[in-house]
Image (cartoon, rainbow, N blue to C red; front, side, top):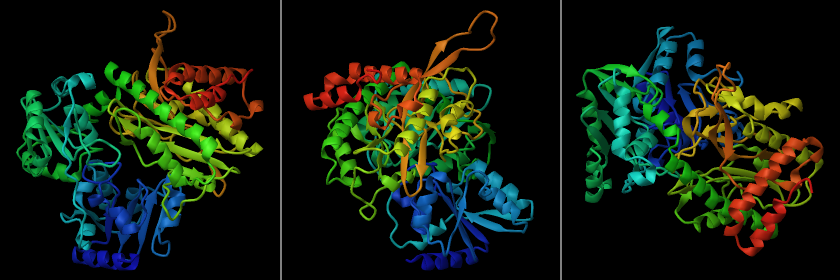
Length: 593
């Protein structure tokens, strides 16, 4: 179907349901970042494939809301004669709910209630009702109704992990969840797949790049239930789960289980869908951030050790790749280079595939923040511009995410200037000491300050949380200019990834994953502040020496770089072949020598 045919078909269905607009978010019933093909409705309908973006279709107009990471991509993929791009950043476009309220007319907006969170539904309903409008739940997804050959949902078998591998048994984690419910409610409803995987110590293969299985969970004081397609759980897995006090029921039984709940039911309004809310009809609702999210964010000693091991192995693969790239770049393209990096990772023990779609962007493609190379966009690598590669791996012991920007020839003064400014911000945030209670918004400026001095900035957050053999993007912590109430806590893992993007020219990003560690208690007996924290690098791959502008670096920054490079040599050198060892020793040689 052409976009004209898709719009016409949807508008016909909208008229049947007597609605003025139909909302097509990128999300699915579990708010997954990577949505299974069967639930890729927004991408199918609009042709925009970015991971974040929501479509609103009216009887006469159509809009796509997305953020600064995807402006360039949206301009390339959308049919702009039929869609208006709503640039959701820095006040360029009002959020959807606010925009609906600004129309000041009684609008009926239809939506599949499974793909809208309770919080989103409340905001949209409030905006609409102010002018006599209404948010209409339509049980049949209208985009699905337009397709004659829908993809099927994946049904891969699950793996049940031992408590020793995860640092705590599922039974222990469930006990912690029940303790957090004391005085708040009688049941916890969990819809987020990574929370379910962490709580029950299970992993799956239903979601691209992330070891998750499609399921729901319900925990009360006397039962813990996993709702899942039963053919994904073999007899051995059922027994393992039963030994942890977990009952397995069919995925489709979840709706009836919700309807049977009474008392007070706790759930996360930012994750649980409007559909879930509609089905919990006999109980009182208590809304809060999922305690599982908070417990999962602070890694236990086994998870920390696993993440360190994963990053050591990942460093071997990435260093092998960078050494190879410097020698063999001629004749390579964005796709072939990404494939070579993947082959080095695949050789590492316990490697389970990439943790997200590799961003391999040469020259102006590097300026597209979430660029995804295709055979149609693939270009050769050259030696006259920057090459940005953002990639990560899933290992049975942990998850990695790293970005490096390199030049394969003689960089220009502009390349060096902006690379060094980005690196200065990266180093500043890495070495910043901050007090207990500080959140990401408090430290974000440390990474941007040097770019601001030169009147440039970047349009994405500086850091996100990361799971352990789970999601590469994990909450609740985030480092961003946006208002964030979640404090950064000891043993959280965050990315440190400032960047700079000059459309039509090049992009720069430098990313390490870091563990938040305590560096001091109260400064003295008179102080009421503390403890204090700092980041510790997990990533162990050198920066681009030839892109440094030494006139912009302080003596302290050079010391930090040298100390980091020395740590890389001490940790990784012995795991490399002779040629790669020689490359790494050159890359990590002291800057002050």
